[in-house]
Amino acid sequence: MEEYKILADVYDILNPKEEIFLQKPFFETLLNSYSILKALDCACGTGWHLSLFHDMGLTCFGSDISPEMLALAKRNLEGKYIQLKQEDFRSLGVSWGDEFDMIACLTTSLPYMLTDEDIVTALHSMYDRLAKGGILVISSGITDSLLDAKPKFIPARINADDAFYFICEYHNEETMTFNILYVKKTADSFEHKYTSTTYNAMRQSVLERCFGKTSFKNIQYYGDYDFSEYSKAQSSKLIVVAEK
Image 1 (tube, rainbow, N blue to C red):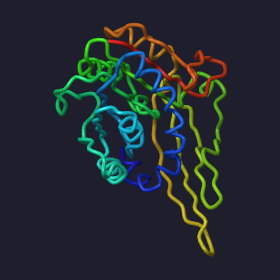
Image 2 (tube, helix red, strand yellow; image 1 turned 45 degrees about the horizontal axis):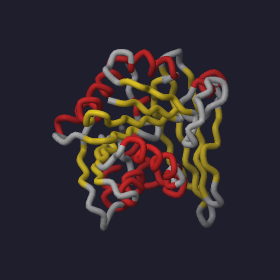
Image 3 (tube, rainbow, N blue to C red; image 1 turned 135 degrees about the horizontal axis):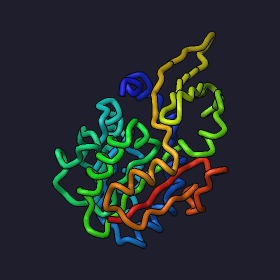
């Protein structure tokens, strides 16, 4: 996760909390449908989903593999009692003995798993920490429509004084790379940060194949946080809700 050593301090510009908080109605529906009281965000990043869950009345816990992101989450969650731990979500049982009503793995975190074996290992790890009847929620910005269109250049976030750009490479049917350029205007010039990360080219079919090797049931695929049906041709998000 070397990219987070470079981008951690500007990550919230790319994924601002205001947009995360707009997901509240989606999670409210899940909380009411599944009687969720206790949640783990197992790829918590800078902590804003945990902040949202906490403010919705849940008992929350968070973990992430990146110490840089956890340091920011600790700062962002100051004043809220939310336990944070550094942990790989393929081995959640090492750090967490609790069972959770909901485990979240959001914001294109699962596609860091480059092989079916790693995806299935992660899914088993999450399943084992769920209470009976609990749910796993996954979200990803890697979709069938993106992988079919293969855009080379994506202006990911354009603000008045700074911007994020993705330059995309599509290696084969299994992986892709985002080259991430952050540019900020200064008084008389520009400054920038650059890194790259390789993801699993995680189509719906990849998830279906991997979930088929687990005991999850009632697996639902959505194309956005309004519960719209996932469209391979059009959806720009891939959201999964799976029950234990």
